[in-house]
Length: 171
Image 1 (cartoon, rainbow, N blue to C red):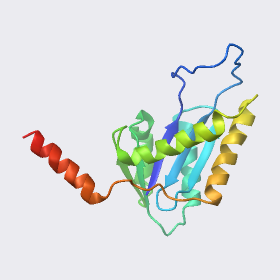
Image 2: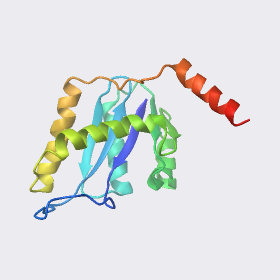
Image 3: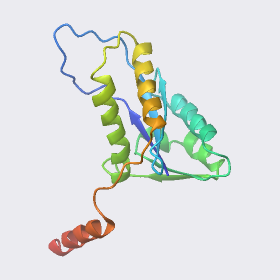
């Protein structure tokens, strides 16, 4: 399975020192191969459908042509436009699944972005967008060199038992 998530927090207020200077922003589109833990990521100057389409082409180029591509995406509006429905319709090996924002599939990708933020972005000083993008791609390359899939912390039996308890409590 491949999961797509967009990392863009333009509206989130950040706490910075009084002398913090913003040197630009970037949009990172990333795909997580949940079987291996490898990341395909690409930074773009804008966060629009054109960039997302370029990113999908990049993902398609990285996946061997004999493999299907199940893709789980968040509910970002661009993903659901006619342009993308047509794009996916012409590519039968892509199998699209949408999930609510808080779905556990998306949580795995969010965990990667949290690691990127904690271990690379917050610790760095980026005096330009180019420096920021270099730091992001360096982190992705390092992670991919020793990639490991994210592990569920609960067994299927634990999850099903929790669901059963919830269903019984709401009857």
